[in-house]
Amino acid sequence: MTSAATVAAVPGRGHWVRGVVQDVAPPGVDDLAPGYLDPALLPVELLADAAGRALAEYGPAALTYGENQGALRLRALLAERTPDDPDFAGPEQVMLTAGTSQALHLIATTLARPGDVVLLDEASYDLAQRLFTDCGLLLRRIASDEGGTSVPALDEAARAVRAEGRRVAFLYATPTFHNPTGRTFSRARREELLSVAARHGVLVVEDDAYAELALDPGEPVPSMAGIAGHRGVLRLRTFAKTLAPGLRLGWLTGEPGLVGRLAGHGLVQSGGALNHTMSMMVTRLLEDGAYDRHLPVLRAGLRERRAALLRGLTSAGACGWTAAPSRGGFFLWLECAPGLPEEQLIAKAFASRMRIAPGSRFGHAGRTAVRLSYAFNPPGLLERAGRRLATHLHDPARHQEGKGSC
Image (cartoon, rainbow, N blue to C red; front, side, top):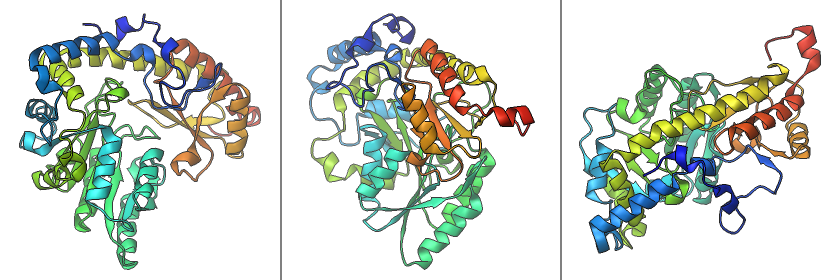
C-alpha cells in the first residue's frame, strides 16, 4: 500500500491529456481554476491494491448490481463516521451516490419539481447552480457576510418566494470550507439558519464535500445535519476530494423517510447501487484503516500547496487584494482593490499564461473577486504563479498612500 507521499514520485502528469481527462488547460498554462487534486496527490497504488483486495474478498459480488441503497457494510462504516451526531441511527440513514453532482441531481428530480426555487448564497458553487437550472429549478440568491449566509436575508427570501406563490425546493448550503469563498460558518450561524429553515418548512441540503480536509488546528464545527439531528437536513459527502474524483463515489445521510424516497428513484431501481464496484474498494480502505492513514498525508500536501500560493501572492506585499480566511478545502477567495475590473484582471492573467476562476462565475456581484485553487498544482508552480498574479493585483498608488490593508 502507498499514500500520496509515495505516489508523488510517479510521473502521472504525463497522462493528464485531452481525451482522457476533463478540462485540460493548454500546454504552458498554469491552471489555478479547477477543484481537482494534483495528479501527484492521487493515491494510484493505494487504490490499485484496494481493488485487488476487494475482488479477492467479494469476488463476483463486487462486479454485479449492488443493493439499491448501497452495500450494507460500507453504509455501516460511513454511519460510524458521524461523531458530531451521537443520535445518528445507522446505515438505514445512509445512501451511496455517484458523487455529489449525482446526489444533487437525485434530490433536484425527486424532492423538487420544475419551477420550484432553490435558495443559495449570492456566491455559490457554479456547477451546482447549472445542475439546478438544468432540472428546471429557479435560483434565488441570498446575501451573505463574513460569517456566511445572512440569517435575515434567508428569512426574507423564504417569505418572498411564498408570497409569489412559488415553493422553495430547498436551501443549498456549503457551511464548511465554502466553495468558492472558503469560509466556515460558526455553530451559532448554523443554528440560526436551521431555525429559520425549520420555521418555513424548508429542507436544507448541506454540501459537505471538504469536511475531512481541515488544514489548520482547531475544534471542528458540527455539521448542520449533526446539529439538527438530521431532521430536515440532507448531508452530502464525497470521496472525490479525499481519494479521487474518478471514483465517482459519495454518500448522503438524512432521515430514513427521505433517504428511502431517494433510493426509490428509477435511476437507482434500474441497476441498483450507484458505482457498486468502486464502493467495495473503498470498503476495504475503511475496514483496514488505510483511508484514515491516507488523510493526514493528503492534508499535509494541501497545506504545503496553500502556503506556497500565499508566499507567491504576498511577494509584492498584500496590497491590492484581501483573502477570505480558509482553514481547509481547496480554495482561496481573493477580493481585489476597488476599481480593478474583472475582465481586465482575467485578461492580464491569461496574457501571462495563467487561468483563474472569476467571481462572476459563481454569481458574485460585488467588487472584483477570484477563486484560486491550490489543490491542482505542485508547490513550486503555485508559488511562481502567485508571484505573477500578485503583479496584476498590486496597486502601488494605494500602497504608497497607505490606504487600507488591501
